Image (cartoon, rainbow, N blue to C red; front, side, top):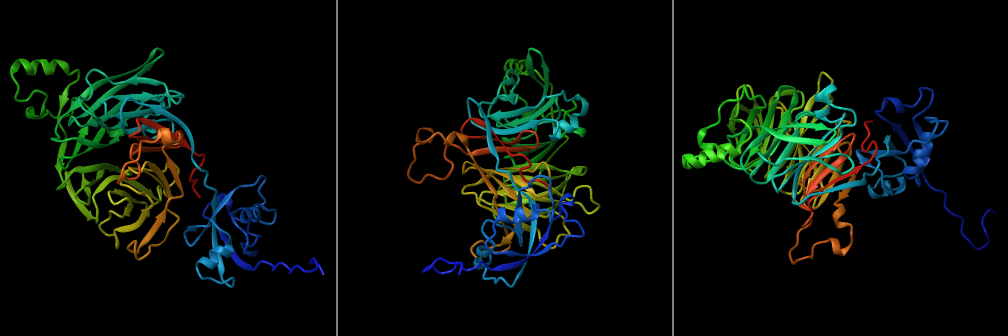
Length: 498
């Protein structure tokens, strides 16, 4: 006997048939090797990775860590536990999709401010503005742009040094949004109801940020922006319910309504004083579209067609706007107030490419919708996990299946849209996805002394709400918050295309 006297023999683990698949061309199994295997059910991710890396399978020169999806869910247990949790038997054949392992985002740095930080954007060789800049982007000109509640825009280098900041001619109230148009031009908007264009330059002595255009048209706070560098166009979303379209060209911009300019209704001497304080020409919008019945909270260009825009609002709707006619082409009504919007281009480069819109809600979740009028079902997927309102969104830089969200719960969550499960009855059914990583604010990791004192009725995220987020291949995930910091987290190939 192989067993010690008096001790029962250990039961051999069950076995199950698995069929390995992948969508990554460079990870396909050779044609002479079968993807159908019988494996022990006690295997977890590491054991399955070892099988795939072995000489009889992929025969990789060095081990590649893998993650595994079964019916759209990442495998986080053994195969036996997966089968038992779903009432399946080992007689089943499991189809397992393998993808390169997800690398957790690690904390890199924090840039401290004097006030709450409302928004962030990045400039790098891999960012949207960097690609638009082409040869004008200097080598190693990687920068972070922040907008803060003190009304100041700041530009930072990767080491955390503030290279430039706005001063004279800047916002007269909180800056709520900011974007790089190129390596030399920036757009911003704020509580002072204006959109502002800035000229940015760097020299050996440092950087300068000077106003080049003041844009008037909105009658309430301008809370969100999007830009399209090649055409010099800017979109704005305002608490007045309107979406504005602006140009960065002084000669092409219409005159601003006199009633909206600083000092309107004041005495002539005060008007002259206020006019003298402005260092930039004052212009109006190309069009101002009153498309929402409540505050407009987001506006973005279609990634493939800059004549199409999408907007979201507290009125629960997402609207598709034809910018050439300034008319709404379609509207989708959701169940909750919407706070942010991000376009996700599906199948870029393919003849059948399309756009999904991720919409952040005040109900703590994110809903993905198909804006096409011909879509059989507008709601595609619901992302659940945040514990407070979702305030900001950014698409992943490498693929069409990743997304990061920032929330008033004090976290950023990273989502892999390939991981989908059926929603429970309590969740309202449909398709649901859960985040694969949670990034917490580093300001709260310093122990009890770093955390604000708890109060009765406290909601998650008090003192560390996330207001803005950007995701760039060079910088990683850059977020801004109530803790007066810009935080950078990075993971190599965080959600690698597969």
